[in-house]
Length: 79
Length: 257
Image 1 (tube, rainbow over the protein chains, first blue to last red):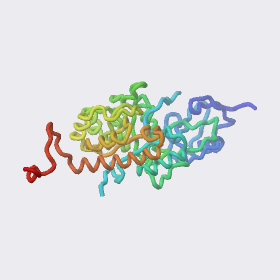
Image 2: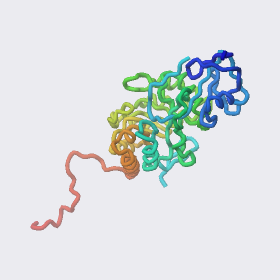
Image 3: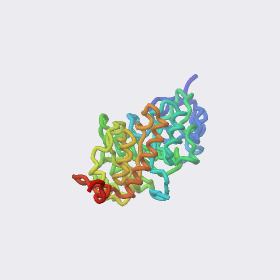
Image 4: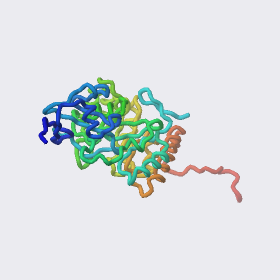
């Protein structure tokens, strides 16, 4: 199967069949949209933009959630 | 009722706890309960795309009972911390952030110049900023002037359990601060938490001291009592220290006099 486009998802290359909304991307990844925050090309999206913003070739997407922590750790953003 | 207020929220518990390093979610839930905390800090991290099997932290935190405080732990620049704070706001739907900008990997000491910059930006964006900082009265004042809603100096390095290393600085920060003073990091055991409160802290934030104890639930209870005891002692007003004894029984009427 040929992939139509490549994005950078949480720092890694990720292939998509076609451009799609953030909501559709989360659904494809089986991620509950209520539990995450999404950054699209360095812009943090409001939740109501998930249905509107289209992920396209070359885009950078970060999907984050809450994890256990109190003080610091060693996680850096890349890309 | 003894309460303290940060920005527009009033708390009765002066103990703020973390969510990291617990042996299991069940232990964490019990420890949170035992601590009596009302505010819980959580980290913001990338979702694991390839392995979706892991449960979400939020499955274990009753957000109707606890106020979530997203943190920027692990960020090494103002830019990273600002990005993370914005993401945390969208994930948690609250504009509060425990702001951390780390300057050194071994000590996890804060980078105070980056921290001050990030504080300014986030305050402008409407965040309630609680910065984790050094036990330095001057930087605490600068953070307050930049609009921080509280100052959170470290007692000792994160996770070190060394207790309050510079009690005199804490006293001075207490005198200087018009915003709440929260001792964040360094507590090892109950007496450390009590001392922080006796020095005049409004609250204490801890994670490892509870999560890393052999019995985290019992330690959470101990910390709850220590924070309460230290607060009461602070408000009660301790006696002055003196070099020599001062008898507490009457000196007259002794048998045989």
